[in-house]
Length: 262
Image: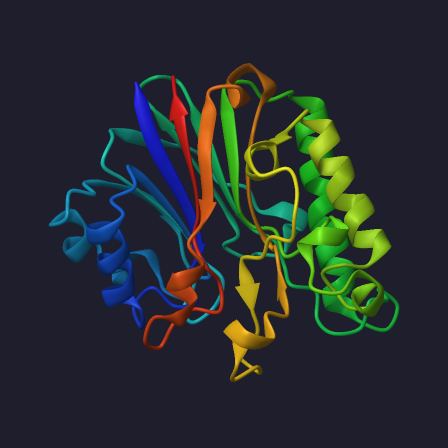
């Protein structure tokens, strides 16, 4: 079985319904994982996606905030939905395909602007969320699993436009990178994107604050696609669709793709 999977922080699935449909039409991933849907589940425009062949959906939603969904052309059932760090946020959903592959879709808290949990509650929530993820994966080593989502951390020096300039900026601070490294190690997760594209600067997010986002290219790789070692070698053809960031009224994130032969 071969399937292509994409992950995309859509920044409002209702506002950008047309962009989701465009991606489904032009790129046709078999599975599309969305974050920051900003919608109750019942108001996600599922009928439009179903008409394009995405007949299966598992999701967790909130009004105007957070929200994760997995849309699939392949039969899929909900496998889990955890409230990490007990925040009461819709930030995780997992679905299982008929071949037994479990897909975890995460939206890790952004963490605010100040990288200090004493001064910034949101930063503490982010670290707690990652610690909870680590402990979960350590307790139950995942197998035959894929983890995707907006993890809101750019871990490598070449995952940001300027390593030294961003060391004190939330999303690239050493403490965040260390927490994400522990999450990855706890599940033995393989960074599929970097397995396929091991060298060079690679970004999936460009700020709305930069009108010349493409020319300035001050990006960060905040969106990730991982797999457990038992299936990571079956992954290939990783890519980030940078051009999508230039669509009309876009999300500030670009979708990340990989194909699996399982």
